[in-house]
Amino acid sequence: MARGGILSGVKTVVVGSIAAALITVIRFTIRWQYVGLPSQATAPDAPPAVFCFWHGRMLMLMGAYWRLRGRRPTRSYMLISRHGDGRLIAFAIRLLGIHSVAGSSSRGGLAALMELCRRVEAGSDVGFTPDGPRGPRHECKAGVVAVAQRSGAPIIPMSYSTQRRWQLSSWDGMIIPKPFSRGVVVLGEPVKIAPDEDQESARIRVQQALNSITEQADRYWDAR
Image (cartoon, rainbow, N blue to C red; front, side, top):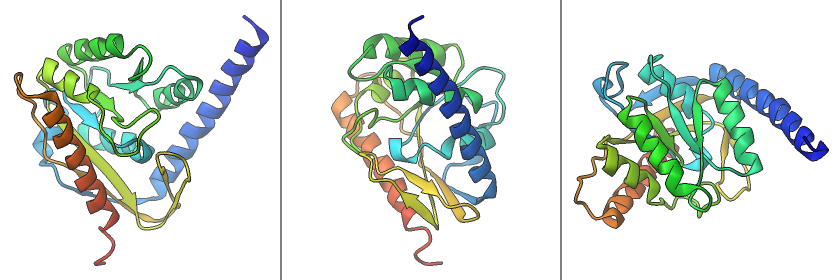
């Protein structure tokens, strides 16, 4: 292996491990509340689903997923891009209990979507950041709709916010909770895609659902 490849691998392991540890520590300091979806839709024995959330809101949602879903006997997968940062994220989420499928709208997209469909059909949940990996922010791409439509699984929108947080100046406006703050996870009603539904109209429905619950999460503390 070339020196550059070795250094890249070391960076992935070190930075990914630190990121996973920080996410876990911060998550456990937050006093979380949950709003939205009836519990039976996310029970451990519920059928597989397609969970989706904006790229800038993914840091804390893996912990929320496990709390809601429980430790299922089958694996859970998330679509992660093939570029260097994507591989780092894939390593970090693996430490948090989520496997990955490599691909994005620009590289390896079709093969990755087909693999996710196979995972759902085998009984696994899958996760999407439908505005990733490069944006535009809060603009849903069609991949999540294609997987849900082909597999027949419902799309479950998720978002979160915290009362005190930092917001990065990155393209996705990622929020990082300040430790010992209060947090809320908001889940939308399942979005079901009919086999014959136009994918553009379904994409817009998912986008609107995600924007609605994200706004709800951000405003949760206004009246409190």
